[in-house]
Length: 345
Image (cartoon, rainbow, N blue to C red; front, top):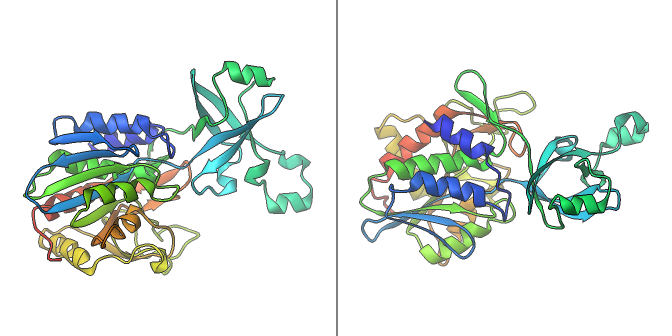
């Protein structure tokens, strides 16, 4: 089931540059389902199903936004940097896991208590630079004994939970949702083409794994599987994000107001025609916000016709992201159907 796979992936911990635990889950899930699995120099996991000379690259990034130890003071309090885009109020007072050399260590993100703030400080809120991590230690030496050092990766301590109506919540749905979609596709795939399922690293800090893997693979076309923001809840309007949860996966036409990806019209038409002929409900998007691995891939060498397929996901870049698992399942159905038909490029 997609839900149980997503649970496993969401509960795993793999910030940018430390994706190993997620890598291990994917490798186990795909064992015996593909013709080849290998890790490249950057740490991307590349799964290949061999076919003819036409190469299609599917990409989903493994990494989640996280933190890293920057400094440890004499009283055992830890300062950190962010890896990926965090909104400060989301981090304040969260519980975290520090992945040290002696195993996991739990801590909390602290800051100046609101009771001790003046009116101006309350208005501004706590800045990330003023936050710290408290693991219960009293000295720098105690921190060292816990296996925590400069460069220790840190992730949020939050677990997957089911809501109602096929909706679930958890951390790192950006982009474990795309990873789940790609795993299920590769497990069931039957295609005359050579399909590269690439689970990329370091997307959240600059689309790095996608850039290097696309250079080596040099695909004829590509699809990234990621998440996108719906406009179906308070605080945002449909005019700003005209897609909804539960109404099918989203095909990207443009993201980041064109500064990221302007999708190949031919690839988009291919996917829309397949969806129409197979009765698969889809949505399309012109986005103004972030971008995906498709941006790096489509600029590879002489250019790669590309787009993105995304399940709409609320509250991204937080520990309580929410999605409808039916949108992932429909995304798998769309890819399985499309990969049997050669796009006209």
